[in-house]
Length: 350
Picture 1 (cartoon, rainbow, N blue to C red):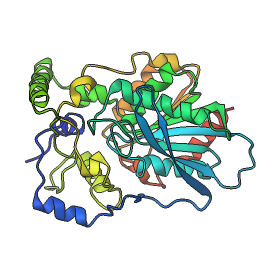
Picture 2 (spheres, one colour):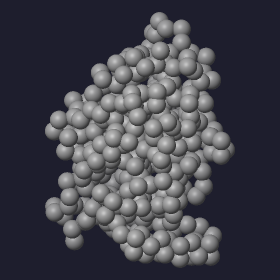
Picture 3 (cartoon, helix red, strand yellow):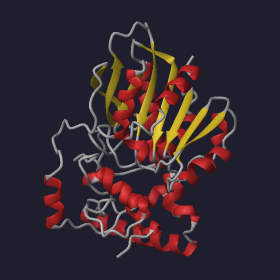
Picture 4 (cartoon, rainbow, N blue to C red):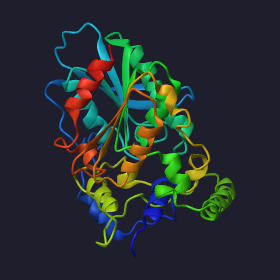
């Protein structure tokens, strides 16, 4: 059966009944499932250190701090990076951190609360508030490091964490500059679907199902989990973006055993807060700090970036990458404009 855009979005953020077939298990045996597996090669110009820090909810976040080797700077400018939504730091955010450290920045890639190696129970939860707070906690950590200038901290949000990064920059005035790539506004998508086509009746039915699930979870003393956001096998007639997600998360290109999008599932009630707690209402208040929004020309998610660009105040810049789709900006070094990221942060972290 063809996967519709709306159904795909419900898998991304809400969850459905989960079952794992034999073929699924066999497919995973082909992947690299070691604990220390990274989906990219560490630069020989960079040092990677495992770190932990707490957010204001007491959740311990796990991160990798990437530092340039032989830096002649007394204090480094720093960047906190997270995303995509449902990914882990050994995937795209780590690749970005590796590249930015190679360019002279301290870069922290971290797992959001309740996911990856970060703490929080039950597992695999998302929250408009807590995932925004995770960025501020990363800024806390960076600002306490003796080799980092706390007045020169920016953030990068990839995919769904693009929205949370913008929300964090709105409220946390310590963040001097913010970049998003392949941005999603996850609460908007969860509540309204792609292009805001979900009707009030459809939204109500979804929330009624989630509400009833809470009784079941409360009775069982634990949450139920939905499907993995990405299928283990394609039929061939799926939308381009489903094929793209599969190619990244479900193949050796980007598979990671701790990634929800590769190997896990959100709680069935995951949409409960996301659908009712919009973000980015105060996007104009990032100004006068700069925003750089990057999207692929052919990305299904491009409209999220364009809408936010229109809503944001100056200074702002929208960069459209020719011939790129959504997942190209996860790991395609020939598509991700790292030279632009370097110049943007050099200009604005002064």
